[in-house]
Length: 342
Image (tube, rainbow, N blue to C red; front, side):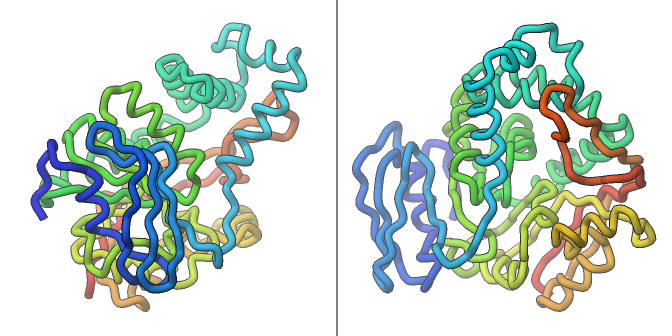
């Protein structure tokens, strides 16, 4: 389907979707529309009669049978509640010069600013935090993957589905540089809600639609997606199980996955990775084997080696770190994993 920037987004998105449980057609009961966008609605399955709400412009198509750990919501709620109960700590985090904060605390400050809707200051603070949390080669290798994906997206027409969008770093790049329509997805409605407010702040809300679902059981019709992207999303999906089979069902074209792989002989980090169950897509050999076993043709492109260090601990929140991995210095292979149906 050709996508016109002025086309009614609700019709476009709805045509791609079906029930994520039984794959029957969805019927839409729309309560509130705004600027050709669904704001409040219910989607009802014609088969199993499951109901999926749209709340504040976020389509929530999560299934009850898969367990999930919404770390975004947990961290946000814990920090906000903690600061509410400890005004002295809030003052320490938010009132002093940001340059004097530890890098992880700079990141926490950026998160709180986003929650307050102070997006310009929040992103400026987050950029400062990232420059202090990660090595220059790490950031350069990561940004290189963004540019590589953007260049390759020119070969595809129509909208892009971004999987496990998180804070929408890649989505923001796509919209700002390509002015292409994107469906941003995550299993966390809370992070999608914050992202939507951010894109409204930027004036780009018309380009982005938001869907909450579990990547292991998606609401898309068979072959509905020409191109899907993800920014380090595969490695962060817990208990991936039949993830790749599900993605193969819905993608008719290509998956472009920004990835980084750990060295096979890094025993210290391997132990930590295994303990949290993220080994499937954290190692190149394992990732390629998973793709092959699921009927994909996959290859690694645009590889860059980059030194990675454990992120320093917070000074204000004892024991907190920006990232759980790596736990010891290592060298990562940043790349874009391109996959298509074999």
